[in-house]
Image (cartoon, helix red, strand yellow):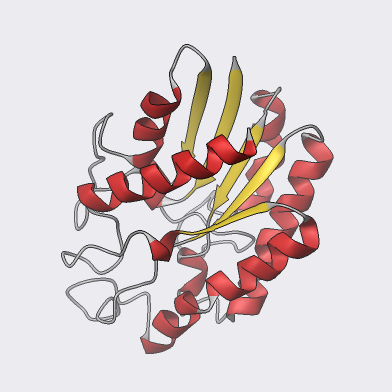
Length: 207
């Protein structure tokens, strides 16, 4: 059985837009991927966490820095055939003041951790969906700003560069899905389905 680690944030965890609840199995993209691949041949590990970043410490919530936990997860889920990394949305928050290129460097650091702690694992880097143009408004998520939206739109180019330099597979989630109009930040059920199909096709190419 091949094992796939999906390392991400709330859009990997499966947050239902504008709630604190999670989409059930069969709706979130990781579970759809598992079913499409065949659970008798593939084990998809869902390692999503709301608020997770690539390398930044959230001043309001503990344990959100991806670089601090990924090495442990790589060892605890060993052996891993494929590591899928989809982070960066939370890095766009105003508190971090990060550019697209800096966030890309955070992803590169995570890729290097995979190389070190799971050297036989292949890597798929996924740039996240864009933030909606109203995400920063009070009724949605004021932790973001106008600039955050622009930064999110620059992540695909930054991540593509990282994937070339680090020799990983790459997928741009924004080409297949967009944020829900409910909160301008998270995938709808339809978005999860579209992303799952794209990731499934890419995984079949890789493995």
